[in-house]
Image (cartoon, rainbow, N blue to C red):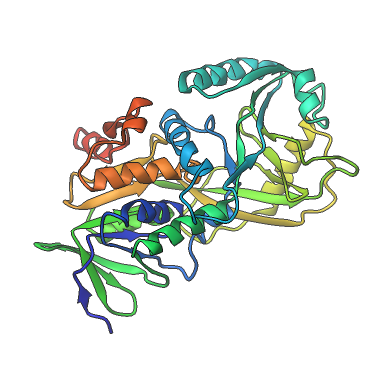
Length: 385
């Protein structure tokens, strides 16, 4: 049994993309421990990502963090990964006639964030993805600079960088208790032993409110939402390699090329308790029907299907900052479906704030404030009830 160790500055709970990226950004400046309850990193959400970098995707705070992540994702540190993190793809947001005003709203959001985009006619959209049905696609908005993400390389790169900087990263190290005292936080681990540090970073994804409960804190109201995805064969004879990702403007489905096949999702958001999520056959079938209304894509069989949990705060903005109700308890949660593409900047923000510094200048210049992402916004709202 290991005794209490008091030689860390920061303990990060969770080694998914949030915890791994925070460890990478912090470990050169602080003594960091990362504890993960599972026997693999990124098991529940990171490893089940749709692997797309689309800064236009998501609410304004995530757009800012995604834009601010671009430089790191395109030019990571030497030795970070052997493969490019980003490769060209493009995104096509499609709309029927009645949905065209939503394309205008999306274009306005793109202009506000400085994200390159083009509004297209239905005919122009079909030139980029020929299987789209003329009677369904009246217009589209293209995000030409959107990219595919090599999620595994990015995630492992963060972990590699953290280890290189001396971080202590542990699997099968579930936190079963959090106690605060004069020396800071002590995390009791399953199987015996404990580690201590002045600062705890709660990067536990769908379990973030559960971890807060271990510290005696009220939940913030984070909601895990299940999302399904599956793989199908490409249409016979179709050259899909250059197709963009295609997303219904109201997110009733999307599809994208994936290793010579198509990855498809109903973009479902089913509230769920934290658990090892699995796909439902009915959800897959309904998605196939919606997709085929918009695109001539035959589906003879589902090659593989899976589901993951995307966890959102009540306002769907990220939660990054110290909890005003508990000294040294720091939240890095609520990444929703945007955590991978925004991870580099979100981790830099978390590193700065957890070390008592201001937001990184480039992130602040894009219009994000610490108050917009602080957990204090929920504590203050609760106190006014």
